[in-house]
Length: 347
Image (cartoon, rainbow, N blue to C red; front, side):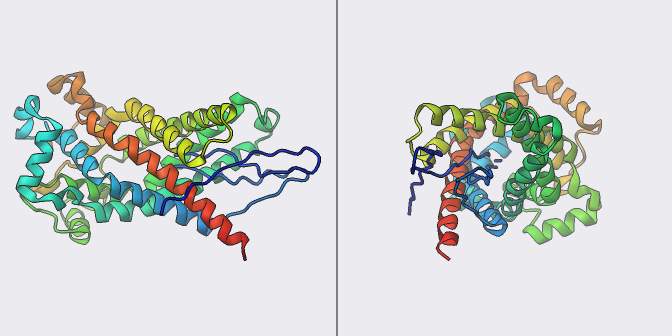
C-alpha cells in the first residue's frame, strides 16, 4: 500500500508550532529525516536506531529487487570485452541482450543473484544510513564547523564528507557479498558457482581469502565520491524544492530528487564501477587473469583496447535502473521512517 508522507516546517507564530524535518540522503543510500535539533518550544520526533536500520535495509533490498533485471543487464554489458565475447561489442544492444537472456535462461534469470543482492543490500544500506548520521553528527560537532553552522557551504561540506565516509564504511563491511553477487549475475549458460555458499567456498579455495576482496580499491575509490555526490546533490535539490514548494508531498519530492542525484553520481563514477566489476571477475570460473597491472593499469588497458567509450559500456541500462532505483530507495525509506515514527509515538 502506497503511503504518502508530508513534512511540515517549524512555524512558531503565537501558538502555532510544527515539526522540523531536515532532508535525507541516498544508494547505492538515503538518510535520516526526523532530526533532533534542540530548539526552544520545538517538538521532537524520534525513531530508534533499530527502526532506522530496519527502514534503510528494507528500502535498499526492495529497490534492488525491483530493478534487478536492469542491474543484471548493466553487469553483463560491463564485463563484455574481458574475454572472447569482446568481438561482438559493436552489435550489443539492451533489447537484444534482454531477449537473449529470456531465450537462453528464462525470464527468472533476470533475478539471478538477487538473493545475494538482498543479503548484501540489507546490511549495506543499513550501515550506510546509520554511518552517515554518525559521521554527520561528528562533523557538525567540530568547533570550526560549529562556528559556521547553518551556512550553505558548511552544510554541503558535512553532507559531502559524511556521505563519502559512510559509503566507504558500508562498502568495506559488505564487500565479499558484492563480489559474489557480481560473479553469480555474470554467469550465462555455464553455471560455475551454484549459490552463495558454494561461490564463497570456491573463491576461498581457488583464489584465497583475499580473492573475496578483488576490486576493493576501485570500489572504495568510486563509492566515496558516488555516495558523497548523491548526498550533496540530493540535499541541495530537496532543500531548493521545498523552499519554493513546501507543501509538496515528501514522497514525490524524494522520488524526483533521489533519481536526479543518482543520475549525476552514476555518470561521474561509472568508469570506476566498470573497472570494479571487471576486477571482481578476475580469475572467476577458473579463467586466466586478464588485467594484471593493478587499478590504473586496468584503466589504461580498457581505454587502449576499447576506447574511452568502453569506460561507459552499460551506462544506458544503468540510467534506466538508477531513475526508479534511487527514487524507490528514498521513497520507501522515508515512508517507512514516518510509519515507524508514528508507531513508536503511539506507545
